[in-house]
Image (cartoon, rainbow, N blue to C red; front, side, top):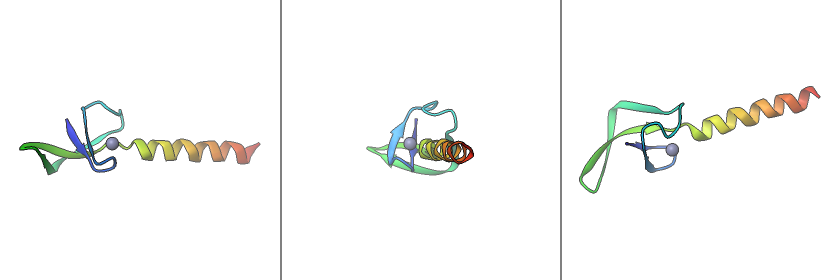
Length: 59
Ligand SMILES: [Zn+2]
């Protein structure tokens, strides 16, 4: 489990294959300490959109 800074919520490890969990930086929720991380879901979506744009431009 880690606290996703992107979504501002707790994710399970493996939520996204591109996730990045920091070794420094922690978030405490209800007395439980979670490492901070990024699931990079938005970043992946952005990359996919960019790829789609490139494809459309090439048509
Ligand atoms: Zn997230």
